Length: 153
Image 1 (cartoon, rainbow, N blue to C red):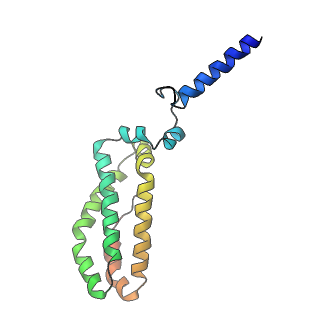
Image 2 (cartoon, helix red, strand yellow):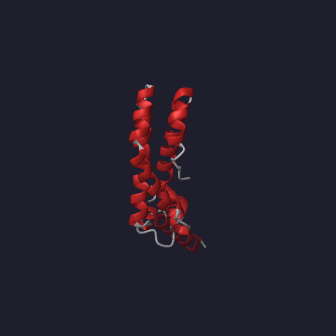
Image 3 (cartoon, helix red, strand yellow):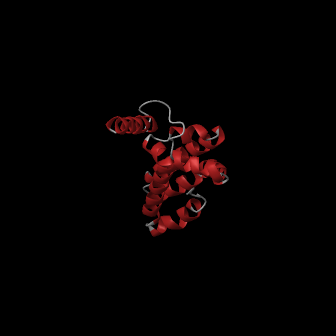
């Protein structure tokens, strides 16, 4: 009886070690929450290069746009900002379209691999645009330009 119990304990221990990735590959034991703990390398590897590039471009362009908006400190600055950002908005829209056309597993992998960075970029942009448009004079000029920015969620 003791011997049989020892074998069971050993078998369960070996299983636990292999399923957590300590003892080897994770085939057969992989789950989304476990991938989340391991920084999602599998989700990133499963994404197509087109979607990875679009996600990186979206995050970088939105972060750049947020930075430019943060540096606006006068009505002249607002006017210069609005005239200078159109190419960036077009690039951002292109990346947005690629990301928004993902479905099924690819959407799941995208959100797993890039979700926190996308959410952070979106939140930064929303906070900065709220601050900038709180000035009623700037809001008239900035409103139409910032309304062109579509946020991926």
